[in-house]
Image 1 (spheres, one colour):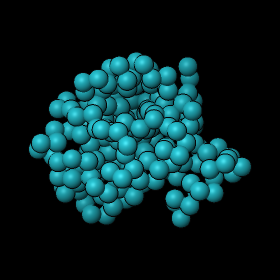
Image 2 (cartoon, one colour):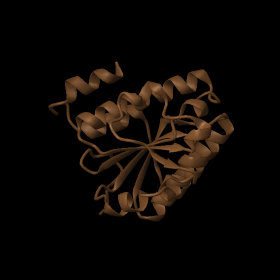
Image 3 (cartoon, one colour):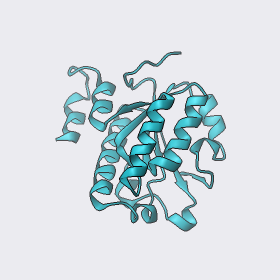
Length: 185
């Protein structure tokens, strides 16, 4: 199945990687605020559009639990992991192979470690990977830029929060357009 370059709600799976309290403390305040706001936008939209949501926590004992700012929009327990790629977490093999949705929309921390490794693993399994550039971050701009270049070069599609939202809607006549377009105002 070729999912194409545009995001489609019926083909998408939203993956939030390691947006955790202690890890967030290492990020710049401005970048973190943007990541949290944009993550909440796509979490709310995904919920309204019945898009499956998965979120992971990297070693929560050391890095804390999922950031309080996004917990209200998550209805499932996190997949806890110690491996850097989310694909290596216990139970993810079944999710990836059993999920008929080809597009994996990715947000999270840190771009150059867990996000990149997850992206590369999903690409190797012939998934369409869409990285939400304003929904991922690293502790340094250099690491972020390197991760973006590597993922793009490997075949990931780079998008942003608004693009994903409006591609999911597809048309201003969509029944959720008025409600969901307000999320970005």
